[in-house]
Amino acid sequence: MCTRARYRTPASAQRAIDNGYVLADPGWRLEVHSCAFCGGWHIDQTFDGARMSTADRSCWRKSRYATEDQARRMAARCMDARGEPLRSYACHECGGWHLTSKPIE
Image (cartoon, rainbow, N blue to C red; front, top):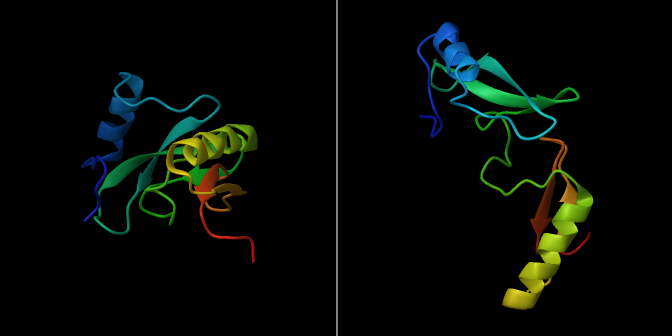
């Protein structure tokens, strides 16, 4: 079962967008998509052809940063707070940036 908002019809999902109940990240736009997992409809964000769907991408539980600079600044803050080295990497699933403690292979 999906853990995100599920709509019974594409029209109800579109109404949620139109009424401002769901907001997109800056530069992203919202689209309604059917879900193969639950059979319902979800609202996903898209940006330059990259689709950010919490059901279809492996990174949906990770923090996403819009730019490499934002991710690097957060990695530095985490290093200062926890002492654990982190690095940023570009995500081919969502088009954003994530952090990892794994070394470069």
